[in-house]
Image (cartoon, rainbow, N blue to C red; front, side):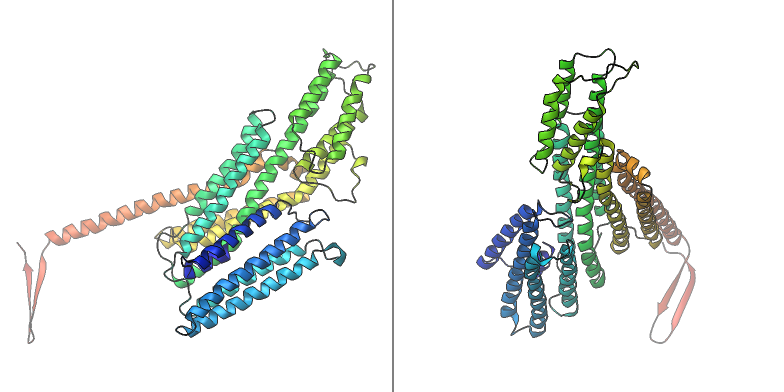
Length: 503
């Protein structure tokens, strides 16, 4: 989308050809949305088609964009030869990257034995395309971004991405609230994601340019938006996964409480306890179709066997009784696996989860999510570094001192956020953090701190400006009421008349 933006703000004109291109680009976006649902960080046999489809779509979109640039070359090559030469370089770069995308279609095939993370080459190509388009446009006359609405378009793209985050909040609310209705914890989880999206919006638009940018500043502003948009997407996606993880741990807590209730004094009737256990699992509304059909069968078998077996051991005299240990592990373990599978999180194929009890299984899935934990806070730190750069480019404050303070605060908080990643070295600490709602509010508090500092700097700057205005007004009044010197000049002499008061 960003490459299309760089073309549209300079060359797009309303024509039949442009409308056909827009229809093709819209079709490509639909294809991205369809194939993107099967995207994972690790290529597997069942989703390799998604990576191949994305490669074809990326390659095709670059070919289409090259055709659009070529049409403009044909229109201007006689009158603007240097500009046509620069556009030819851009076309060559786009065609070269499209060939790499098409070649990656073959590389994704399983029989080539290519490494599972070859999709990261896409990001290298994204950077190559960005630097070629922006760099050639910068050094070539008549095709630069001066007198364009590049800054506004980048802001609109950012707003679209943040809007996707708002849509994601509605999906999270649907998944967490629909099964059992609103609870205090579901409210806390959804509020954490919502406030994060809201403060991201405020933090970005607070550092938007207040006036026109210089040529170099405009280039820097636009180029920084490409990594910023990637960081935003990963940040919003990571917050969703963390919120859903908290929802899973909450459901497992409810299941454990239901199991304990079955053996507490006074004990409920066996039929009541089993019915409550069934309803607790049913209320989770697990999507077994996402790789959890085996777990569904095991859960159903256990629930069918429960009426024929003693729910609680009879030789225990304490107030709290437990179900048979094997039954707890089998039931809770399979529910845990099914819940995480419904989120699209599955263990590696060589991992035998049947040998793990429920606590070990939960810990294993949290270890899998440790990658999400790391990249969430790394990306959050990158976002804060970029906010600091935007602060310097946008000149939010007129005084350089306040601009420097605002940027320094953002840099300090970026380092602080990056330090949170060190929790991974102590898994028990990271596990406690990931299963606590505090993790959803960690970055929100950072953004809130930035906003409060900006408001404080605004207040100080307004006071300083008011003081300066008052001083200037006082000086003006003194000059208007005090004695003046009248100087009369001619071509031959200068006569100064002192102490002449004007009336």
